[in-house]
Image (cartoon, rainbow over the protein chains, first blue to last red):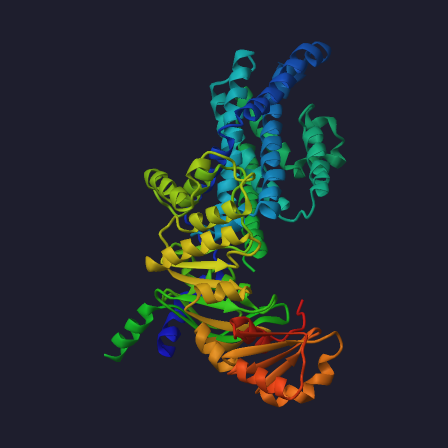
Length: 276
Length: 317
């Protein structure tokens, strides 16, 4: 028996470099659980879509009349509502993703022990992370499709590239869902959710969402560039207007990097918390 | 040739641990135990709170890496084959962690999906397991309003969804009323008849005597005794116990008159325990010496006597 174990050390060593039990079996069943849970709460799904639409109407009727035309991507003049709509799509993708992966995840992790139950099966932390994040992205995707349709109906899309708004929204969702879930694993009590609000609120307001980044003095613009939402907003705005350039690759790369870091951090944290 | 024999033996060992250690920080919750569980048997871990039972169970369930020593579960290494092992075992945790956002039926179906069973398979399995757990009439109810016994039955049913070869039951009946307990014991016996290996932790001695073919007593992270319930009673206690109850405070004074009537004795706040093979004879002898207790009781030794002898009467929290 001794000799057998010695020969098994080789591959075992490589596997040991991965944190214990993190190998993935496929996160599909984790997503399926969420679908079952939400099969009866479709009203919440509807409200998640209604909110950005109400915003859009407010900008169309109110601010739009007040502000008039603004300089959009590529220097062309656009209606204010057409300027702000793609940014709202990005912001709602962020808000939806953060909402879905913070309180519900905290509840399942700390109180309902849903993830402990999952880890007693062949599922591992990577499955849980990917499954929960995917669900947030799917849910966000449903909202985005509806949102883009509303934009089309309101005549806010001026380019066929606008169909790419939906995949772009999924990328934004993925980035924020995975970072949101990673952060949730550090929270210890429900009152600490205020910290997340404290981060999300300024991101929402200051990521060039409501006015172009040129409004800021040169010296603070780098701060806006740090905001992950800014990259989502710029991406969406360019796509909606049909003004594409290489900087978009950079925006996607930033969001993809966040997503990757978030998934890895979430898996690691779930492993550390539950597989002790 | 020798290898074949060894593999054969391994085939029958569901769990085999050697010098198994689990440390949390600097503290060893499990301090080097050797343990073997054979196919088809019901094996018990007994011990007071903090003895290391649950830590051992978590290592066997492949949700807690060992700190040192060797461990094989179903012939595989939990460190590298965790998911493959978990696919073939069922776990009943100490505290129910049913999915409160799902119904009874959905709990079973969704859990089955975690194991990669098909939708058709989990639909059929849920119906079968609800019947097994006598929950068919609550199939589409939420989990939260169920009684403690029902939740426990559902948790056990859920652990069966993948037709496991081995069940890990961490204090399966703690906190249940006698009816619920007996119903559960019946179900576990049924599973044993079907050949499902069971590993049970408990500090309920009656439960251990009811369920376990073989058990180990753990204390302070170590195994202090091992055997079948009757072997342990034979080895660590006498056939009978004579309990002599005195007026409060008198038992210490009476002790010198009766101490030599039994191989071992114990002084409790309200009585003297004499461990004697023949309780009747010891009682007669005590009477003959003029000892007049308020009341007397002769009973058979139980696993509880063994347990208290091995792990002491003081609280270990």
